[in-house]
Amino acid sequence: MNRFLKTLTGAFCTVSILLGGVTVFAADDRKTPSGVGYDDVGGTIEKWAKENPDDYVSFVTAVFNKDELLYEGAFGETDRENKVECTTDSVFEWGSVSKLTVWVSVMQLYEQGRIDLNADVRGYLPDGFFQKLKYDEPVTMLNLMNHNAGWGECTWNLQVEDASEVIPLGDALKATEPPQMYRPGEVCSYSNWGAALAGYVVECITGESFADYVHKNIFEPLGMEHTAILPDHSDNSWVKEKRMDLYSYNFDGSKWNNNGQQLLYINVYPAGAVTGTIGDMAKFAQSFVREDHPLFQKQETLDLLLSPSSYLGDTDIVNCCHGLWTDPMENCTLLGHDGGTNCCSSNLKFDPETGLGFVFMTSSGGKADIKKLIFGEPAVPDLSAYEGTISDPGGLAGVYAGCRSVRRGFYKIYGMLSMLPAIYKGDNTYDAAGVATIRQISDNICVLDQSASYPAYTYTTSDGAKIFSLGSQSFELDNTIVPTLVLIAIYIIMCIVGGFMLISKLISLIGRRLEPYKGLLLITITQLIRPAVFMPIIALLTSYGTLYGITHSQGYVVFGVEAACMAVFAATLISSVFHLITGKEDSAPKWKYIMSILGNGVSIVMMLMLELVNIWGI
Image (cartoon, rainbow, N blue to C red):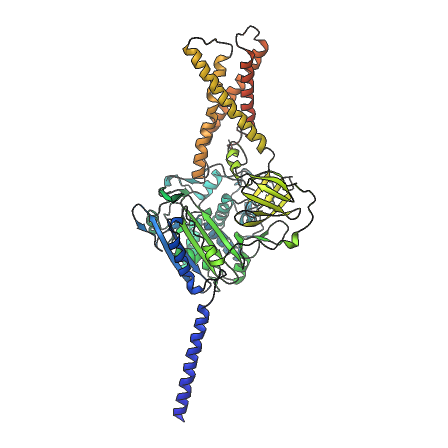
């Protein structure tokens, strides 16, 4: 009998083991939305990296689900010249993915009852903190999370090249405050400054620096020992040393050119200064899908963070979830954030339903699309419910300027780089500069087709601004763009004409055939300095592209140059008009005075249209 029981027990154990093996095998047979098996994720990424070596210099990536890290890998070299291999211990910059530390911090304080997401943030900030608010409406934490507080882009530089120029967060925000362009809640315009402001609100509530708060409440609980957040990485000496091994590269055909370490220090650091290893980034990303919600005391807080907080217009298409952007795919909708610095680009994306996600970081220029390898192709939400009659066919035509741009002053020229011209082609279709097509399916709903398709929403604000919104990026119809460009073109023509006249004067002077006339010296001076108006602008635009702004000292210099030029133009204009009217015996032909009047008149009008007198906040 005992022998029979032992045999029966042994058979039962054997069957259990076999069944257990079947269960394990079934788990390993799970597939990602792109059709790749979980156990083939690493092989798929490694195969892509091997077949596309010219598409990157170095990158690191990790794939995870709510229970485990499925894959972690590193490829290429962080320093090609010195053959420094990229490993999972290499550090990269998160860029704007850093903003997720802000939103997690805010939700932790919300959970503790220390912040009201719908309260005016001025209640948490020092008195008189804002200096450039245009509207009296409250600016709430939800406005900051949804990037719809109404701010344009900063004019003053957000980052510096010298670590000694790094200043406290509150001082940096005051020094770089952008103008408020729209009423809070009306226009979504991505704002680094607004996200950094939210980090400063955390400072004001807790009484400790944002960096200290994040280390204590995010990095340490998750075991992120190889991550820094301060602009100069001084909060983690290991990261600071490893960062010196990372170089940025520019992509030029099949050739990679060393672009240096690109060590720039972001003064408004909550918006984009986190730097660390891919393993630590994966720990942070996985915390959004883990069932034990390690960064929150209640599951409800994490659920609220991942719930919709803004929609595309009056549709039910989710735009943002408390600072995390939506990314519709064929089989799921991802949440997360992209990032970019002068040196790196990054992605953190996850599917809140299944818990599957990935993180990715590369030196500038890398093109590895891990999202596509894991989640397949992007998709446009079903818009059939929004199809309807179009009351004004062709009514969207016009030139739109990016709301996330410099909309005041001479840097308006820089903002014009984000123009979106819409030319009506009939059949409710518009051409967008030959690089995209806009299909209008109702009065408010459109689809922009480019490399992928994106839903868009058009509407008019309470102040009468016509907006074309693409989720995190919006554009405003700007009827001044074409006249401004025409004026700039005429100005350039006048500069060229003035140049030829200067050459003619020089030849006449050398040949001693120059006949002086009234106002000759003043007119000659304006012809000389007219091209110089663009010189500091060109130089500063170059600086803006690197530092995301200019220093106050540079602003004062440019303001002084522009003010002096305008004064000379005005004096010459008045002088030329006077001599044209009264100079009957003047030896100079009238056309010289007419050219002077036209040239200086155009110069003054152009400078006034670009608001040269009051742009620098002086």
